[in-house]
Length: 417
Image (tube, rainbow, N blue to C red; front, side, top):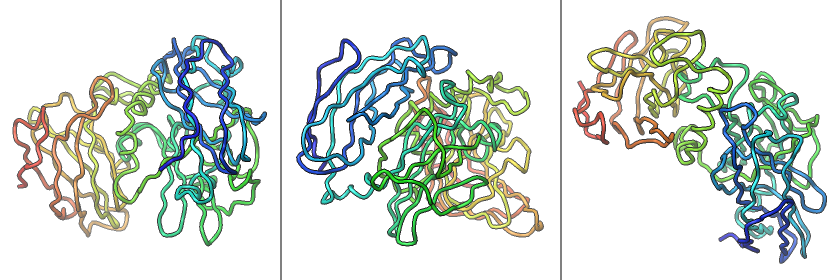
């Protein structure tokens, strides 16, 4: 159980807000600060969000209030603190906040992680991350959430960014990954040493500076790769949550926090990356609420997979007929299919030849979920799921008929043809 040191429940009527707390012993400390940003709208230039400046003992960090006007608890790392009295100070950054976005601090609580705590290593080794130079005040590619996967003696930290300014196009992101956020592992540590994901997705040994055990990293590329040297005026110390990324798609992390889907969609809107549904306009995409999302686990070795949805007698494909946008990786994957309505009567899985020839097959081992987002970007009940393994030869499709009622309610007993 986490040791809650203090819960400050008094709403802050004026800034800066101050919250005194006391640590019982030397420990890593996490603060959960409940804040809101009145007037904020992530889709509107000049109103995107307030940026809170947080400090303890003169050490500063920042929080972008991507949750908007809703009250939200933002969990941040305060680092290793000595036993005794401390004060958390929260203020609105006039330099980096959107002019039309205010800041209200509603309260704060504190969690102490001494070395004896089972989550101490996860918290103590979590990276500090500076913003990509040039993005300060622009509310693009903002790191939103951090998770830690603890397996095989390793700690691997992954960050969900609000978007990706470079690398994979938005259209291909929706087809191959089922999202327009960027999800990247940034730091890994274990018996073999510490590594980070550098330019061109290279695993590089970490040789940078530490604050305690916390490595200092900075985002340096338009597709959110990091470096172990450099600095930015915006400092993020996002407290990670535990996650087993072998148990499902990384994208499913977003489903548990629908605000992330909303931020994804509204950043696309603000950056002019949306088009009317059913049209084509370069690499733009439709509003994410016009897509069917599907999570599955499969094996694609030398082949690629596309997923289809039938609506009103017509098939709509995840890759829209472009082999480059098909799924060519094994393991868990998410894809999405733009559809004209939610009256889906069938799904199909098509296997596409890889670069080395036309032989082979795609194996679909499990379909975890198929769903739409509602008006508030919350995942709706499953359209269909299956634990039946099946193979699809290259050049063929495997069709699954869905009961008529599955267009609007969960249906898990679809028949396979």
